[in-house]
Image (cartoon, rainbow, N blue to C red; front, side):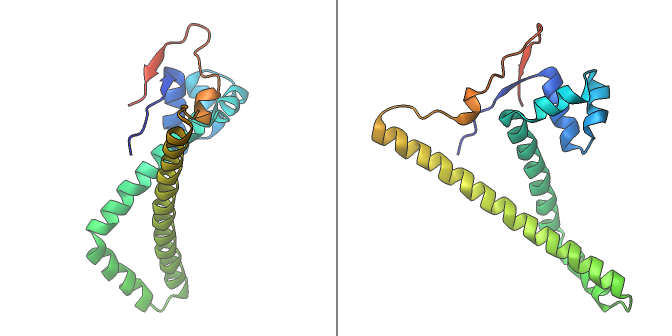
Length: 153
């Protein structure tokens, strides 16, 4: 499935990167030089939210790939923790393993839903002969105040 790239202004790219890294809205505002209210408004845009989700998913996919590549080592550590007498260690190890498994499944389902949406859009276009609008295209993402658009990488 081909993903169409959306153009973002340089400040929006910085906002996306900082949000993915876990910075607070106040920290983002200070770094970019805008108010935290402007950060909140920008983060409400569907295209910004989608980009943040996309990059978070990519980070998790990379982590899960590393986990899969080192599963033998991880399994040994996990089994060692489960044999420990400390119930807190057992609980924390179990919670972490569960979270990794659940998030991996969530990513898989998310990709399936995205593929189904794209297939549905293509079918609608084939049936009607008209292009189907992407809701993200309908928002006003034009740069203001002389900002320059840079293509998202």
